[in-house]
Amino acid sequence: IDLIDEVISRLGTSFILWLSEKTGKKSTELTVSVGRDSRLSGPRIAAALIGALKASGARVLNCGLSSTPAMFMTTIDLNCDGAVQITASHHPWNRNGLKFFVSSGGLESSDISAILDLAQAGTECTAEGGTVEEIDYMETYSAHLRKMISDGVGGNLEGFHVVVDAGNGAGGFYVERVLKPLGADTSGSQFLEPDGSFPNHVPNPENEEAMNSVCEAVKNSGADLGIIFDTDVDRAGCVDQHGREINRNRLIALASVIALEGNEGGTIVTDSITSTGLKTFIEQELGGVHCRFKRGYKNVINEAIRLNNEGINAPLAIETSGHAALRENYFLDDGAYLATKILIKAALLRKEGKSIDSLIEKLAEPLESTELRFAITEPDFKTRGQEILSSLESYAVKEGWILANDSREGVRATIGKGWFLLRMSVHDPVMPMNIESDEPGGCEAIARKLLEFLETQKGIDIAPLKKYLA
Image (cartoon, rainbow, N blue to C red; front, side, top):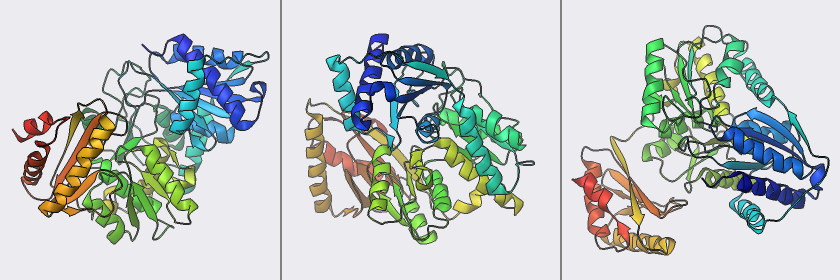
């Protein structure tokens, strides 16, 4: 509804103006790549965007159906001054949006604000000489991944069985351009054809229906490994040979095993809702350091970059949603890259008669867990949310709950054999609450203690908590 052609054109022009100021180049000296996922509105939006970029005098590389990480890589491999991916990631089929990149990574919120201000002002930029070239950069990107695998396993993937679920997003290339040329058995793979209506399930590793689907596909085909991508392939989840999902804390644990090889004692940066068992696994089993930071994959990535700039070895930034960025790969959250690293490890283990799940068998997982979301009903939701958190912290101390000493947002406290975290949403007037427990009924017990506090607070809708307890 909002991304009509005029709006898209203004955003494209504003991106050129912003790039010109950032690089010191004239608009006619800029090269910008454009890609899209499989959404139905993608071709229309791409046409409007490319038209505006060309009208500004820029050289435009039209990459067509692409993954988001591949579009970033055009700034590295093709020396593009900027890149735009048309995607709404895991959101419903009728949503869409734009992701902007330069060679240092995705744009910061302040950069996006500057582009929006230029678009709102209607600032124009027109010049002669703009060109459009259609290129198949996904083949170059796929060749990188094929080389990673062949170097990593010392040959091809003959005899190794991988099931891939692309959810009809942009991830089908991984079977056709990466796995099959290396001789892998990909039978049982599903939903590889791009279809922006997503007729089978939402392409999202966090979606229960999607994960159940790929787990069943792995069990039915007897595969060694399953891989599921989100729509634009910046996230991935995995499935072991038993059909059990490797997601959230399990995915972080597995990625940590891989990232800490050669980085002994390194720091793994995660978001705030990771489990107690994961921290124990990283620090006691792997000998690393676990740094819990704020929700939001960009927050996690920026913290890892900051630590490295301070001389702290932080090879991995990863969020429970599956956004995983390795230092060796430009701290780019790339689902296909992470899946490739896991696939290499799984193929090597198979040669030893072992399986990928053996790497995380000592990860202690909670017996119970739940997440509830409370709407903040006051107009100034940020102020009210912070007031509630401040009151909760004081209440926790009075009740004798053990406040976490490593929480970077919200209030996290241990109660008995469990913990809770109440925080502000990254963007919305919402307060998510996560609860985990290692004893039966523990989540309910913690929730009842929190109800006693939250009933005293105004401006927050705790109906979801009352429904959960009912």
